[in-house]
Length: 357
Image (cartoon, rainbow, N blue to C red; front, side, top):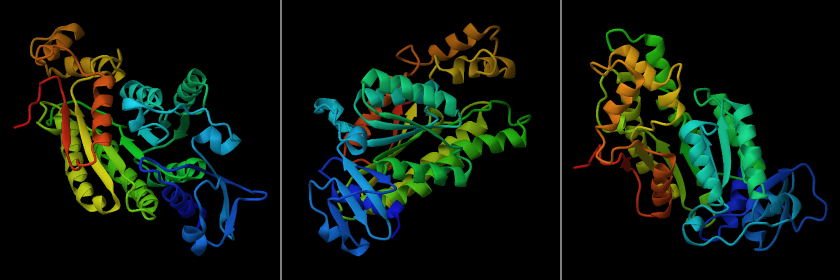
């Protein structure tokens, strides 16, 4: 076994019914609470041990939260109510540095989760993490660069997370792009780019995250973990002049259902949230290439002359007469995590625009 396998195993050995200890890999340790061989760890480890040396493998510091593991300073408040759903649990949000993902990151941190902000935009992720940690007066947010379409980048992200905290409790696959246009004119390059980010990216992330969750579950076989894909209402019905996006999201639901059937043996639940339109985020409102601009230019909304015409067209289709927000989706995410008897589901959060039947 190597350090990348030992750290998740230690999280599993410290499982308290909700989560495991934060496990930080270090280069050296003096007077570790436990020194043993890898094949002795499962039987030799005792509750309350805060430092472990596995001979020939590595050294590990344990704590209730990140600051406790690193410095022995536990500032984590006792979580109650809804906060207890994710408090001190390790979450990853891809595409988390801006827009919808940023809203999810902020909400999870407010609930006490340790959140890795995974994004191509490392500068934005770093600034967001610094702001959130300063506000919380403890280390809860971590920037990490990742290109979800590059398997080596995804693997490096997962390995870095294991080194820092020992494993992943909740993985939220949020990174996504949209290229609107008629099937008669959409370029192959645009179609492939959408498919690679929205569909292939989810597959690659699950491929590398799932074995970590399996390792965490091995000691007790009671360690529930979650993989949650953020898709769209376009995962539930076709979208005019938006075939690449809708196709990638429909495909993601197929992945969710297939992964759910395979990974439940490891106590990993796999679900997707299907949000309605997030009108106020950059995906829709970017003045240069947001969806309002794309849909106006592509003629998707007949008769629309301005961006406001396009927005009013879409708001009028929603029974609740407003777009979806990151708080709406966060509430759905917390439900899926809190509910132990739910996997393989596509949960609409659309203000009544899409109704299951």
